[in-house]
Length: 217
Image (cartoon, rainbow, N blue to C red):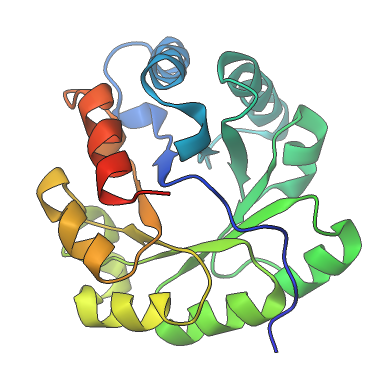
């Protein structure tokens, strides 16, 4: 039986940061990107994951604090792999990589008030995360994408459908475009996660409006 988790997340879009892929000054552009997200998104459908693995602890904490200040309170904020920094900075929780400590141990220690997501690449990973009490998972790559090539062939829509059938909210990741939103929604995904989908040159208002239409509450 799955460990009871907090209420299911209401967000449908998980925007993942990558300051190295933004043009110009990395720090300034990431702050600008957060500002664009704050203006473009109904806060209840958006979550933001700060994923800047090269930063030291102090710099990551500072970035997390800036992100929390820039985003509306209703926008869920997660820090990649660092629940300690998430808690210290006022974020809502952490997004855990596949090799992170077990979700069950973190849930037992911190209770249902902390938002915990997990990166998964196989249906078995999704089942384990659900049993352990994760709030949601990202699953992929669903489609072929250069940034996820190290994970092997894309999982495809059939695997996404099986992952969604486990009952935990599943966010499709990897190669998801506006044109594919309908496909992943029909496969049972709760929403989409990504980096490039939420960065210029895409019109964030158009992207988020399309996501809200494809994944109604």
